[in-house]
Amino acid sequence: MTPHHPEDRDPGPSGRVSRRALLALGGLAAAGVAAGGVLSGIRPHPGGLPRSDRPAPAAAPRTPAGRRLLGLIANSESNTLTVVDGRTLEPVGTLPVGREPHKFRASLDGRSVYSCNTTSNEMIEIDLATLRPVRRIPILDPYNVMFTKDRRQLYKVAYRYTFVEIHDARTFRRLRRLETGRNPSHIWFSPDGRWFVNSNQRSHTVTVIDTRAMAVAHRLRVDPLPAGVEISPDGQYLFVASGGAGTIGVFATDGWRLVRKVHSGRDAHEMVATPDGRTIFVTNRGENTVSAFDIRTHRVVEKFPAPGGPDMPMLSPDGTQLWVSGRYGNVAAVIDARTLKPLATFRTGRSPHGVFLADV
Image 1 (tube, rainbow, N blue to C red):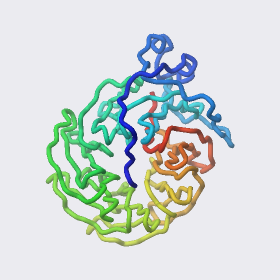
Image 2 (spheres, rainbow, N blue to C red; image 1 turned 180 degrees about the horizontal axis):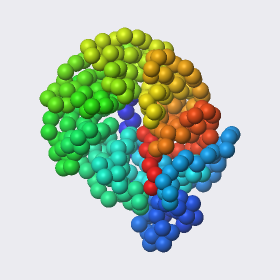
Image 3 (tube, rainbow, N blue to C red; image 1 turned 45 degrees about the vertical axis):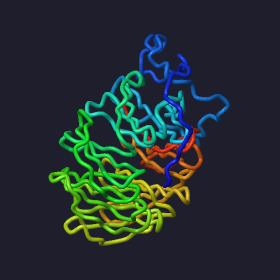
Image 4 (cartoon, one colour; image 1 turned 180 degrees about the vertical axis):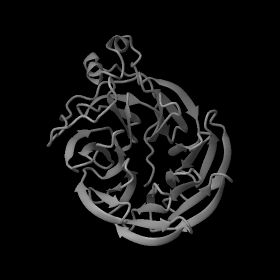
């Protein structure tokens, strides 16, 4: 995917979320706190947009008592995040952030989330209780980031460049730079934390990094335009979604060798695995579908529609809802992850990409 270059503008307050919207979100902040203005960076969702198209009743996901599901969607060409009420499945506000936000990552303590803003070369840390930006972290092209299993390092792919950088997880000081390939984008760790894998979209490769040595161990040739990568819960297989061929490549990790190719759909892109480790959902941007890939049998067992060029899939914490950003249609969809039936579709900003869900 070619990065966008929206007009320069700095994040800053541009209105307040309505008191009614905050009351609807309930668990995000007390209404008195909202009235005091700590959410002054959020503006109400633009008027005139259609209400969520909800062809089936939306059952609220199970969350801990007294908590609510919060959704954030990164609008890469609008330089904003869409704030979504996880109960009603409707947008309630818009949060300006840095230039070209793409992905998210929860903080180590789970109390905040980092918005990864690539062309402003920074991560914005957002407090999940108030949705207030609390810190700017300078970091080169943080297209996608992930903490190591031991919580000591942060691995970052720099999409506009050709490398992965390893940072200290607490100070964010850069520790090492590893050349990987053109347009490194999607990332994952093995269950034991020993291996880090990333796709290099324009080099048509996947890099395997040894996290103990912090060095590149293997470069795997894959089908053109690789994106999503996942490693099976038992650590035995690597799965790679490649948009150029619409395939899922299956590699055995004992020798990092290709053992099977499975057709997913046109412009197969990103992956997310269900909590039970049985299924991977794969978005097919070029045909507006999502594939359900069975991890045990290495087969696509179901395919269902998702609008707008489905890009980033994310499961609710309880695994009952699949949220998908529609990159080309400026929409997002919520799908029942058990029945695969649509629950809601709503408008976002321009070029919605990353999705973040949390109980707050």
